[in-house]
Image 1 (cartoon, one colour):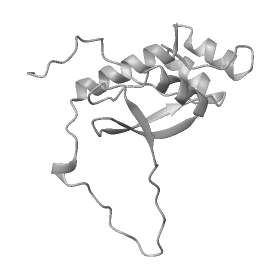
Image 2 (cartoon, helix red, strand yellow):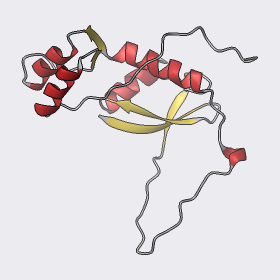
Image 3 (tube, helix red, strand yellow):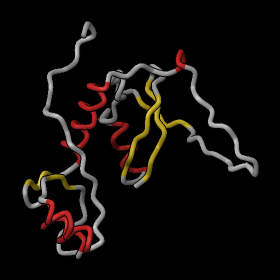
Length: 147
């Protein structure tokens, strides 16, 4: 998995996670990558920022309020839901079973989503399988600009 810093033609910056550089270029060329703020698909990579640890503790720099992009959380949630639906196979109630199969090489590695019980989650943890629980809200109609 590789993480790129991206920007749209309107100047909004965001991260994109890709299998590799080839997958990024493929999604970029097909217009599949969209800005989570304005949904523009004219997206390019920008140089990633990095930090150099100094010997003396430095204060954390903050971005002034007037420079921060105002982002509607409903748009972010809708974008996240769309991404998960398009990039993760829905295995439903078979999530734990399929995660175990992938972990032990019985099934081909891939992104999966689904539901699991507390007991199944504990089994996954005991087997050393990392997973993230992300509660996604129900799909909503697009947010209008006059909301």
